[in-house]
Image (cartoon, rainbow, N blue to C red; front, side, top):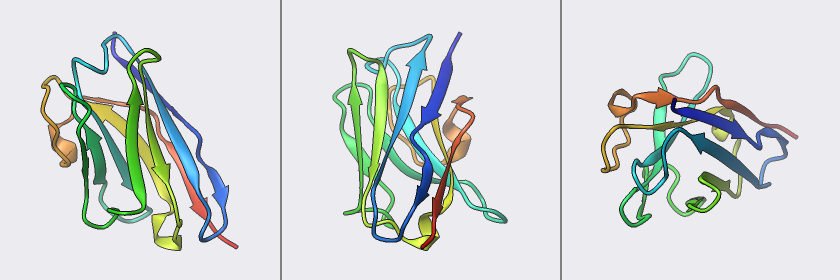
Length: 124
């Protein structure tokens, strides 16, 4: 069955960097896209990035362009989200997800399978 396992979260100072990983099983990253989402306390879950299944094209929310980089290693069946210049407002639980369609979307409602999330805390 489809499983997604995130890792790489932690406590980082403002201005620091993190690389989150999303290990997938039950499907291949060249079949379905991977989306990254985050949810801060009291806020709705928001899509921040997606990498397409067909050719690995990246897509980003305007709020993270220039600081977030999504990538994948098809051989390892793992997707990554590099986050640079972390800000306090980036603090959230970060989730990866996939959907039974090859195209990318940033809306959470388009996704069928979710990981358990990894906590990112930004504090000095």
